[in-house]
Length: 175
Image 1 (tube, rainbow, N blue to C red):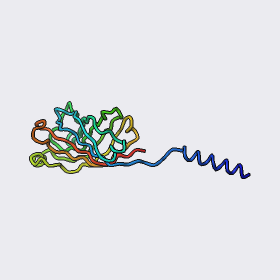
Image 2 (image 1 turned 135 degrees about the horizontal axis):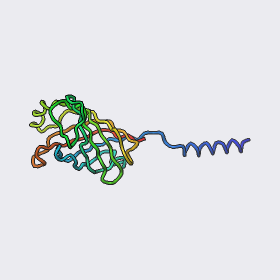
Image 3 (image 1 turned 180 degrees about the horizontal axis):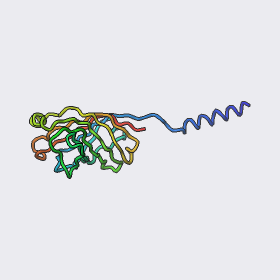
Protein backbone atom coordinates (compact mmCIF):
# COMPACT_ATOMS: atom_id res chain seq x y z
CA UNK A 1 0.00 0.00 0.00
CA UNK A 2 2.78 2.38 0.94
CA UNK A 3 4.63 1.60 -2.31
CA UNK A 4 1.45 2.40 -4.29
CA UNK A 5 1.05 5.70 -2.46
CA UNK A 6 4.67 6.71 -3.16
CA UNK A 7 4.28 5.72 -6.84
CA UNK A 8 1.02 7.72 -7.20
CA UNK A 9 2.61 10.73 -5.48
CA UNK A 10 5.65 10.60 -7.77
CA UNK A 11 3.52 10.30 -10.92
CA UNK A 12 1.36 13.22 -9.73
CA UNK A 13 4.43 15.42 -9.28
CA UNK A 14 5.73 14.52 -12.74
CA UNK A 15 2.35 15.24 -14.36
CA UNK A 16 2.04 18.55 -12.49
CA UNK A 17 5.50 19.66 -13.55
CA UNK A 18 4.87 18.75 -17.21
CA UNK A 19 1.32 20.03 -17.32
CA UNK A 20 2.18 23.42 -18.81
CA UNK A 21 2.14 26.82 -17.28
CA UNK A 22 -1.15 28.69 -17.58
CA UNK A 23 0.33 31.93 -16.31
CA UNK A 24 0.52 34.97 -18.54
CA UNK A 25 3.77 36.84 -18.95
CA UNK A 26 3.48 40.63 -19.13
CA UNK A 27 6.08 43.29 -19.79
CA UNK A 28 6.14 46.98 -20.68
CA UNK A 29 7.32 48.23 -24.09
CA UNK A 30 7.79 51.40 -26.12
CA UNK A 31 7.78 51.28 -29.94
CA UNK A 32 8.92 54.47 -31.73
CA UNK A 33 8.26 54.68 -35.46
CA UNK A 34 10.61 56.64 -37.70
CA UNK A 35 9.03 59.65 -39.46
CA UNK A 36 6.45 58.66 -42.06
CA UNK A 37 3.49 60.08 -43.95
CA UNK A 38 0.59 58.83 -46.08
CA UNK A 39 2.98 59.16 -49.04
CA UNK A 40 5.55 56.99 -47.16
CA UNK A 41 3.33 54.54 -45.24
CA UNK A 42 6.11 52.04 -44.32
CA UNK A 43 9.00 53.03 -42.10
CA UNK A 44 11.32 51.58 -39.49
CA UNK A 45 10.73 51.25 -35.76
CA UNK A 46 12.76 50.63 -32.64
CA UNK A 47 11.40 49.01 -29.49
CA UNK A 48 12.62 49.16 -25.90
CA UNK A 49 11.51 48.28 -22.40
CA UNK A 50 11.07 45.13 -20.33
CA UNK A 51 9.37 43.24 -23.18
CA UNK A 52 12.49 43.64 -25.35
CA UNK A 53 14.89 42.91 -22.46
CA UNK A 54 12.99 39.69 -21.63
CA UNK A 55 12.93 38.52 -25.28
CA UNK A 56 9.13 38.89 -25.57
CA UNK A 57 9.34 41.56 -28.32
CA UNK A 58 11.87 42.23 -31.06
CA UNK A 59 14.01 45.37 -30.89
CA UNK A 60 13.46 46.67 -34.44
CA UNK A 61 11.57 46.25 -37.68
CA UNK A 62 9.15 48.01 -39.98
CA UNK A 63 5.82 49.59 -39.16
CA UNK A 64 3.22 50.10 -41.88
CA UNK A 65 0.13 52.27 -41.72
CA UNK A 66 -2.63 49.88 -42.84
CA UNK A 67 -5.89 51.82 -42.78
CA UNK A 68 -7.96 54.50 -41.09
CA UNK A 69 -11.71 54.60 -40.49
CA UNK A 70 -13.42 57.97 -40.77
CA UNK A 71 -16.78 58.76 -39.18
CA UNK A 72 -17.95 60.93 -42.06
CA UNK A 73 -17.64 58.17 -44.68
CA UNK A 74 -17.81 55.06 -42.52
CA UNK A 75 -15.30 53.49 -44.90
CA UNK A 76 -11.73 52.42 -44.19
CA UNK A 77 -9.00 54.31 -46.00
CA UNK A 78 -5.63 52.79 -46.89
CA UNK A 79 -2.24 54.09 -48.05
CA UNK A 80 -3.67 53.96 -51.58
CA UNK A 81 -6.53 56.23 -50.42
CA UNK A 82 -5.01 58.61 -47.82
CA UNK A 83 -6.93 60.37 -45.03
CA UNK A 84 -9.12 63.35 -45.70
CA UNK A 85 -11.03 65.76 -43.50
CA UNK A 86 -13.36 64.27 -40.92
CA UNK A 87 -13.33 62.48 -37.60
CA UNK A 88 -10.91 59.55 -37.39
CA UNK A 89 -12.34 56.64 -35.39
CA UNK A 90 -9.35 54.30 -35.51
CA UNK A 91 -5.99 53.84 -37.17
CA UNK A 92 -4.35 50.45 -37.78
CA UNK A 93 -0.65 49.68 -38.09
CA UNK A 94 1.32 46.47 -38.68
CA UNK A 95 4.68 46.17 -36.93
CA UNK A 96 6.82 43.46 -38.57
CA UNK A 97 9.95 42.37 -36.71
CA UNK A 98 13.27 42.46 -38.55
CA UNK A 99 14.42 39.28 -36.77
CA UNK A 100 11.65 37.21 -38.40
CA UNK A 101 9.84 36.53 -35.12
CA UNK A 102 6.48 37.75 -36.47
CA UNK A 103 4.22 40.77 -36.64
CA UNK A 104 1.60 42.61 -34.59
CA UNK A 105 -1.45 44.43 -35.97
CA UNK A 106 -2.15 47.37 -33.65
CA UNK A 107 -5.30 49.52 -33.55
CA UNK A 108 -5.42 52.98 -32.00
CA UNK A 109 -8.86 54.32 -31.12
CA UNK A 110 -8.24 57.87 -32.24
CA UNK A 111 -11.15 60.27 -32.29
CA UNK A 112 -9.47 63.22 -34.00
CA UNK A 113 -11.00 66.10 -35.94
CA UNK A 114 -8.65 67.06 -38.77
CA UNK A 115 -9.91 70.65 -38.54
CA UNK A 116 -8.40 70.88 -35.02
CA UNK A 117 -5.02 69.39 -35.94
CA UNK A 118 -3.37 72.62 -37.13
CA UNK A 119 -2.64 73.71 -33.53
CA UNK A 120 -1.13 70.32 -32.67
CA UNK A 121 0.96 70.20 -35.83
CA UNK A 122 2.27 73.75 -35.44
CA UNK A 123 3.26 73.07 -31.80
CA UNK A 124 5.24 69.92 -32.73
CA UNK A 125 4.12 68.39 -29.42
CA UNK A 126 2.73 64.91 -28.92
CA UNK A 127 -1.00 64.61 -29.41
CA UNK A 128 -3.36 63.15 -26.87
CA UNK A 129 -3.19 59.50 -25.88
CA UNK A 130 -5.24 57.16 -28.04
CA UNK A 131 -6.13 53.76 -26.53
CA UNK A 132 -4.14 50.97 -28.20
CA UNK A 133 -4.98 47.30 -28.63
CA UNK A 134 -3.73 44.38 -30.71
CA UNK A 135 -6.02 42.89 -33.38
CA UNK A 136 -3.83 40.01 -34.55
CA UNK A 137 -0.34 38.60 -34.44
CA UNK A 138 1.78 36.14 -36.38
CA UNK A 139 4.71 33.95 -35.38
CA UNK A 140 5.82 34.54 -31.79
CA UNK A 141 3.01 37.07 -31.36
CA UNK A 142 0.09 34.84 -32.38
CA UNK A 143 -0.94 34.37 -28.72
CA UNK A 144 -0.08 37.89 -27.57
CA UNK A 145 -2.20 40.85 -26.57
CA UNK A 146 -1.45 44.53 -26.09
CA UNK A 147 -2.95 47.21 -23.88
CA UNK A 148 -1.56 50.72 -24.16
CA UNK A 149 -1.68 54.09 -25.85
CA UNK A 150 -0.57 55.66 -29.12
CA UNK A 151 0.74 59.20 -29.37
CA UNK A 152 1.82 60.94 -32.54
CA UNK A 153 3.60 64.15 -33.47
CA UNK A 154 4.99 65.93 -36.45
CA UNK A 155 8.55 64.96 -37.29
CA UNK A 156 11.46 67.06 -36.11
CA UNK A 157 12.92 69.56 -38.61
CA UNK A 158 15.16 67.93 -41.19
CA UNK A 159 13.09 64.76 -41.45
CA UNK A 160 10.55 63.95 -44.16
CA UNK A 161 8.53 67.10 -44.87
CA UNK A 162 4.88 66.81 -43.86
CA UNK A 163 5.57 63.67 -41.87
CA UNK A 164 4.88 62.52 -38.34
CA UNK A 165 5.95 59.74 -36.03
CA UNK A 166 4.05 57.43 -33.72
CA UNK A 167 4.95 56.24 -30.24
CA UNK A 168 3.20 53.11 -28.98
CA UNK A 169 3.52 52.52 -25.22
CA UNK A 170 1.96 49.70 -23.26
CA UNK A 171 2.06 46.19 -21.93
CA UNK A 172 2.60 43.09 -24.05
CA UNK A 173 1.05 39.91 -22.64
CA UNK A 174 1.76 36.40 -23.85
CA UNK A 175 0.01 33.29 -22.64
